[in-house]
Length: 506
Image 1 (cartoon, rainbow, N blue to C red):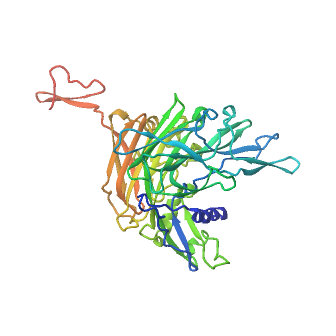
Image 2: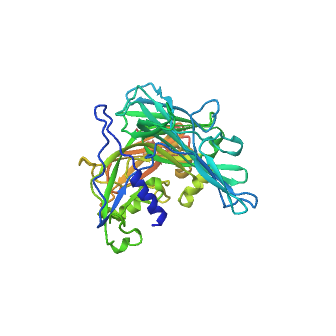
Image 3: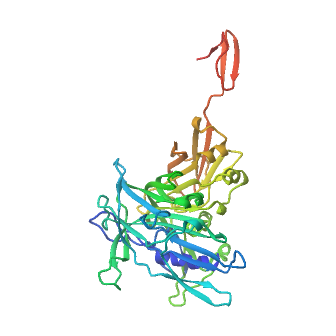
């Protein structure tokens, strides 16, 4: 493991925001993991900590990786603001919520914003000096592909309270860079929702209503959200696949309105910890580079998350014998991230079905502790898409950990892969055991076709590292057998009618 990855892993552990119970009568933080730092072992943690930071800053910067001899390359990370008179594209158009038993969505109202100190960046000058920049918010520039950036917004819903009150942090972030002089291209895109309680406001200004600190809480039970992003000219830049933590997720891309709608319920995801002994077993000697902390003698924590971009499933499998079979606790997450097509590792046949199709091609969500942010693997011999996930066998209360998995593929991509008529097709979703035993697990599976997307889902499967395979098969009748006395005749093609004097056997 590279040193930079270790630094990020240790920082993730230190910064992870633990959740509080949703019931109004119990607002204490959820218990922390029981795995503490030790002198004889590294702590291992597999968790999704990508929504741990309620407040984020936008920034712009330049690098010495020049596009031309005239100028350095520009990069940005934008926190998309709420749509208003100033921000009419690249903004949050609405956030709605409802109980799963309700039929009417209710709008959340925009509330206070976070206090953001501008982030310092610099521009390298040709004489070797640097020009300091202070950026955190700015107005977007559609003509060059730069989205606007604002302060993180808190939204309120008096109809859907949680243990800390009525507030929800709703974040939409977008990063990109200058692919050629004068135009910026989007690389990554993320959405998240976090229930919070406002603890304090900016102390530097008397009477300020800019939020300084919040505490994270659990979601109300049986709640789902619908988040609409008005992309505008950025609509054509969004491509690749979405990955994340939303149960019963649905996605809708509206080309006419140039908008994106994502809906679904929060995902309850187990956090799994364990210990790697020190001195290290020989096969792991190159993966843990830090020794005991000079101040307290303890070894550091290594945290693994899909948001870091590591192959967490392979690492989980290699560390399995050192991990607890029971989750330390369960986190609740509503988030989704987009990865561009350029970052995918897919085979040639799959790549061919993606390369000439602009826009977002697929969506994959799961409550598994670990997954890889990459499209499923296409097997042309079996005509299947397969995907492996991993997690503890038991939840923190000792009950068996049951997984869910949803794969949504745009219909034109699915047709290209399976070369099948989607209107006359049925799906098989098979979950095989991850422990090497034979046979498929008994799960609940389904297939649906909505708004130009094909949805495969599986739920109720068990861990440790199961593989989910989906396959599409045509059910369209292509031949019939007709009889005339003892004579029979096979009729094929599109006009399936028996010849005169022949009858189809009942």
